[in-house]
Image (cartoon, rainbow, N blue to C red; front, side, top):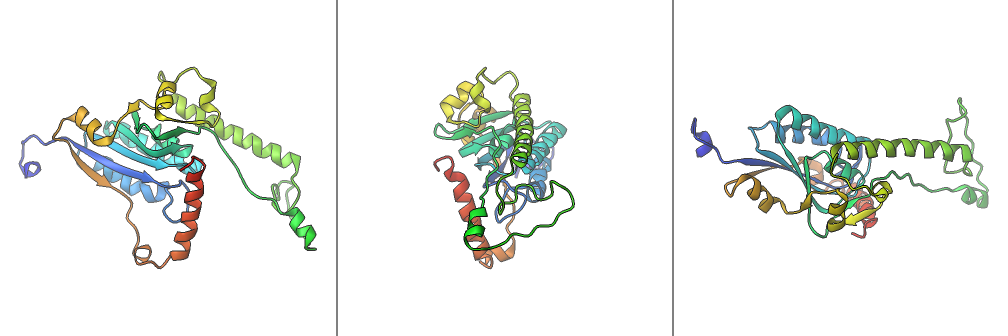
Length: 265
């Protein structure tokens, strides 16, 4: 009842936003700016939270969606003058760490994995398969680079060099973001930006996280024992809830498990 009585002091409230899963523009359960935008907006704009806490459990994914989500969090934090704390569960790696770095402080469990500040592009090639089965690939283009990286043709060194250049440029964007957000905290260690990842004690030594802590005791330490939590998460549509996308769910789960498996999870 206290919050409905005018002029009566309210207990501090922390808005809790759970970000769990692979980051991608589409896909069942994927984290992306389109689905998270209204949830993030509510977390910052509903009432006046003392802080916003991000609970992150993500092996990464799309660098663009990671950047969009992180930028939205940072923009609202500055606009509303609300501090942001990130709490890592199993993993905040690659794009997951990109989002975590948007917070003012990053905390993790002792067994959490953080880092993987790098960029990856992976795929398959099938030219020998076509040859073996007598299949002829026919591709017609206007533009010499239009069919680059075609998985049904042998690799072209020029295509590979062009892709590597794009990956390097994206890597520099990632590095710049981390250096900006963790300014004055990062150790002078070249391994930080190699794509390597670490458990929390080493991550803290490197300056990737601020310490080992869990959300409830840390928020009570900062805002007092009477702090309350208001939880936010994306809403699921009616069809997924009643099991009408089982095949899509199964494929998405396979992709998600493969992404987490890169970190031994």
